[in-house]
Every structure is written in C-alpha cells, then in structure tokens.
Image (tube, rainbow over all chains, first blue to last red; front, side):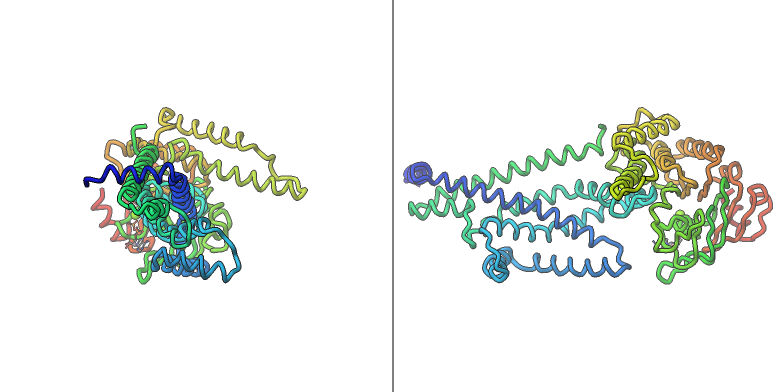
Length: 236
Length: 264
Ligand SMILES: Nc1ncnc2c1ncn2[C@@H]1O[C@H](COP(=O)(O)OP(=O)(O)O)[C@@H](O)[C@H]1O
Ligand SMILES: [Mg+2]
C-alpha cells in the first residue's frame, strides 16, 4: 500500500483533468434514470398484474388474463436480466424495425422485469390485507375495482414498502448490466477511467463508495416514507 | 322488501343452505338465531349476494339480485351490512369511512349527468359540483357522528377507536347510504362485554325509527325486546319462526327447545 498516494493522484488526474467526472455524472444520471423510471414502470405493470392475479376466477376473462400474466411473470423471472436486455436490444427491436437508444431500451427492460417481481410482491401484499376490507367496501356498494384501488391496494402498498425498497436497491445495483448494450452507467464510467490510467484500485473503490451512499440514501428515504404512511396506525 | 325463493348455497360439496323461503316486509326486525355453523352468516351474506347463491332467487325491491346480470353494487347501496369485525377502512379516517360511498355514488351521478348533457339530453337531476358533493357528504357524516356522540373522533383512524366505537361508526357508515334495510351479522360478538350495550342501544334506536333489520345475534334479550319475528336456523334450514313471545315461551321444535335450554 506504499504507493497508495500515487494511485490516488493518478485517479484524480483522470477524474478531474482527464474529464472523468463528466462520464461519472453521465453514468450516475443513467443509473438513476433507469432504476427510477424502471421502478415506476414496474409498479404500474406489477400492480396491474397483481390485481388480475387476485381476481376471483370463475369467469373466462379473468382466467385468460391470468394465464397471460403467468407466462409474462414466468419469462421475466425465469431468465437473467442480461439475456432480456440483449434479446430486446439485438433481436426484438431490430426485428420490429424500432430504433431506440440503449438507455431507453434498458429502462423499458428494467420496467418490464421489475414489473414481474413487483407483481409477486404486490400480490402477497394484497393477500395480506384482511379480506374484511374488501367486504366492507362491497357492502356499501363500491365496485370490486374501486374497493381494490381505494381501500385494499393502499394498505397492501404500506405492507410491502420495505420489500419494494429492496427491489429498488436491487435495480440500482443491477443497472451495471446496461454496459452490455453500450450505455454508460456508473460501472462503465469508472471502468473507463481505470482502463485509461491502467489503475483500477481507486476508481473501483470510489465506485463502491458511490453505490453504498446511493443505497443508504434510498434506505433513508424509504424509512421516511414508511413513517409517514404509518400515520393510520398511530396516535395521530 | 326481501324475498328468497328456494335459496340454496353450497361450498363445494358442503350444502350449507337448503331451500330457504322467506319474506321480509318493510319495517320488520327479523332476528335469526341458531347454533354456530348452522348457516346464519351464509344466509345473511346471500341476501346481499356477498356470497352468490348456488340456486334460487333473492328478490330485493322487486329485482332478482341473485341474477348475475344485474349490477349488484346499485342494490347493495340500499342494503347495508354490519359485520362482526366491523370492517372499517383502516386507511381512512372515521369521517372518510362514512363519506366514501356517498361521495362515490354522487360523483358517478355527476359523470352520468355530464355525459347526458354532452349528448344534448336533459340530466335527470341537476349536476352538482364536486365541492358541493363533498360538502353535503361531510355535513351528513358529521350529523351521523353527532348522533353517536363521536364528532370529536371524525379525523382519527379506526385503529384508535374502541370496539364499541368502531361498531357504531360501522353502523352509521351503512346509514350514510340511506339503506332500505340493514343486515347485521353478530354485531356484538367481537366486543368486550362492557361495550355490547352501546351498540345494542344504537340498534334499538334504529329499530324504533322504523328501519328494516335482519339481525343474526346471540343476544336473546335483544331478540325478545326488538324483534318482530324470530327465526331458528339449524343445519341450513329454517326450523321455526314466530313472534318473540311464543318463540321463547312456547318453542315447538325439539331442536329449538334444546338450543334455548342451552342459551337462556
Ligand atoms: N367461504 C366458505 N367456504 C367454505 N365453507 C364455508 C364458507 N363459509 C362458511 N362455510 C361453512 O358453511 C357452514 C355455515 O357457516 P356459517 O354460515 O358461517 O354459519 P353460522 O354463521 O351459523 O355460524 C359452516 O360449516 C362453514 O364452515
Ligand atoms: Mg356466523
């Protein structure tokens, strides 16, 4: 470790003078963009799928929808994210003749992928809500979907918030796979710096640090959110 | 007001209700008693189609609501239900609990009115603004809360209420829809003994004001005092029905005699 000072100096050289910070900012922006938009998309998709999956199944339409959802969830949970990304970017979109930049593709794939996971989390959350809540809503004449939306899902969301936080953190960490389709994320930014200076130790350390800070900040935000949502359990 | 015709309900191979025929008139207070597992809850839940009858009809205000093609929500608005475990909305404050359904219904009417206007038709009722709708529902909810002396609890969440308070809020929540009938499924069974009285008082109040009520309960005192008719249910059948006096003093069916000897 005697030459650690020198390594730091080399890093600062590429980071500041070599303009490495610009790539890092770009990478950080992409990482957050993909993870946040992906999560939002995932929440919408996941909630819809979960709502379909808890539907009473004595009619044909719910059965068919449920089948479609099962296949969807099976595909996205059964294959690695990298594979999904590569298939979308190099196979599916070219076949359909759609041009999209790699960050947009990554955002969609992350959304579709986390939608599958979130649907399972959300389904568990919905099933954890006392069935009496649905009955209370139906008994005053609210429809199934209105009761679901206004009464059951808000309570389900509260129950699954910690798990959702973990899902978000997992997404942040997984964004490193977007380098496979040529997008710049945190990993790519620091890797570039390492390659250009033949010195990887400090860049990777700083990268790890940034990831840790990100995750800590997110955990904190989730704690705060949870606390504000818990107000219905507390003495006002 | 409510009539069931050959009402049957099975859960899988378990035949719970067997050919129930009953007619409940406006203003009646029908109390249903019977051993646990005899199908009382299931019967009540078939009346508002919370459980779909396996066969038979449930005629409510002239409409067979067991028919899957009717919009059950509209009919349920006129048929309140009070549960053993209250089922207040945990994510809503007390006043929101009471306002939710009335606001929802009025907003629906508003949208229908606006649609009619768009197509150049005269809406059936004047279109209210959302603000008006909420103000009216709020005023009504406060009135209902005043009636049970819980105005100061308007903005708290149900988790802070005692069992008796929860059940009274649940009762006025159903009243907010101005129902034609209210179904009660063991409304005092989950309460601590000292809170049973306040709920029964409120129910007697409603009875005195002419509300049509169907009540499943183990409170024989309430049955004697309030019921216009008492029904004994056992193994999915109505074995005896009578006015409370004769029901309790001159039971005919041996099963009922046996049941009464245990509960009285
Ligand atoms: N959702 C259900 N699924 C299966 N069996 C049920 C269901 N609800 C009630 N039962 C059964 O139906 C019978 C009657 O139940 P219930 O109507 O709750 O009786 P009571 O209210 O008189 O105690 C019981 O044997 C009960 O186990
Ligand atoms: Mg019961």
